[in-house]
Image (cartoon, rainbow, N blue to C red):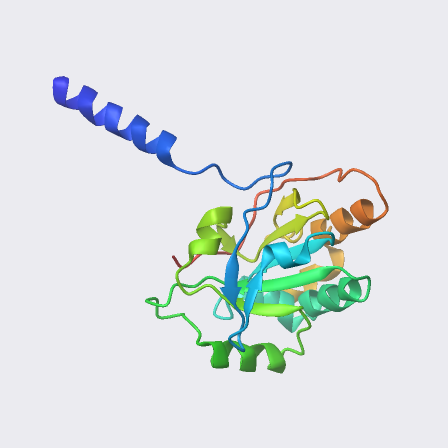
Length: 199
């Protein structure tokens, strides 16, 4: 019994030691991550603008759904034209078989005709851990004050079928449409779906 109590106490202490997950209404954790060209990109560099963080992994069929359908690129171009900063982050750990080098990731993004502001290589997975990013894709929208205003899935069709994009409710577009119009985001949090993050 004494051993069980000690184990429980240890688990409770560990739980309280973990950092709070990034969530709507809290400040987005800052980061400094190199892009595919080796340039350091800091979240703080874009204070004063709306931002989208898109977690990706080219090996994930859910990610490929959104790129093969041109859905992700369409969002990147649509909102980039409206001065929204879009950062795509690959947090697959460098020790994992699905890790992409900066050169490999840049080549894949070019092949997709992708249009984020930058593609970041988080090979230690530190930035994904700071945001408690769970899946690819996992999406965050951040307002000009630096607070998270949306966290979750890209849409409500939890499938790998590209055809589902046409009938999906796109949470990211909805959040950006409301926020950039000065309205509160009506759906600020959803459960992300996709492949597990390769920590």
